[in-house]
Amino acid sequence: MRNSKLCDILLILCATILSSRVAKAANKKVDFKVHCDNTTMMVKLKTSGDIKNIYLENLQHYPEPDCHPKKLKGHSTFKLPLDEMYWCGGMAILNTINGKRTFIYHIIVEKQDNSTEKLSAQCVVPGQKLKIHKRAVLPAGFQEQEFENLDIESVENKAPEPVLNVGVRQGDRRINGELNVNPGSQLTMEINLDPVSAPIYGLLVSYMQVSDTKNLEETIVYNGCSVDPFLFENFNTLDGDALNAKFRAFKFPDSNYVQFKGTVNVCLDKCRGVECSNNQIGYGRKRREIRKMMNDPNKVFEITLSTFIKIDQN
Image (cartoon, rainbow, N blue to C red):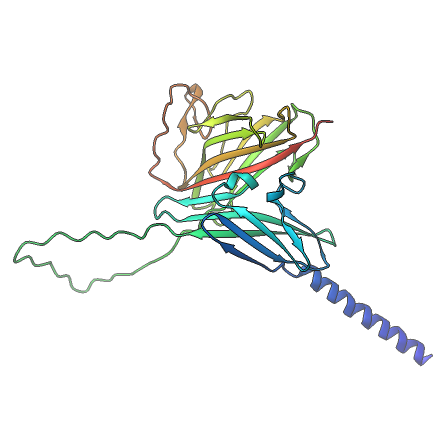
């Protein structure tokens, strides 16, 4: 009887230890390293038995081999372009003040327990060093006024670099790259800032183009205004931190993939809207008289990005 109880206790302990180890393995973060040169980002990920699949965000079944990792025993390696960020859905952030560029690719890791982990691989290219101009020679006998008992407090802080989240929604469901709908179905494109950046910056889409990823392409937003609201409606915003535009699903004749390529202005507080049709201030509306977009003094970043959706006709 005692031996039976002892065996039961040992079995419970073994099950608890095994369950704990499985949980730790499931929660273990994927280890990866990034190497950058002038034109390429190399991302090397360690793989183990708990990893089921690795792919770029929204490109799990995309047929371009260069956008998929080379898989060897124990690791998978991406070789991604920096000079052609659109090719595999990358994002480039230009700091318009100091010229620094940050290149980002998002990688999805699927695990055997059906959980996923999103990795952000980055390369940073510093801008030109700040040029300090020599001060003019002061006149002979110049004496600077002296002040006493000044209570000066020095405050230094840095605003975060913005990160954009771009996606397409069908009703209440966010689409993860692939969509099984008929052309004409109502969709919404969403572009929003990350929670840290949202209280500091605002957005405006200055340019957007759609492509079949091959030879066909069409401009849908130009100089901040929609070119054809019937094809792609106006970008709207309530607070400047998130933009959305309604459009109907469409596909090109020789491709199920539709690629959106865009340029987004990021401004301190809020971007100045563009006066478009019906004299409305918008963030992607058309007014034919507008030839050139006015410079926004609040603009601090310019982000180029691309995203893909796959439309399989029923």
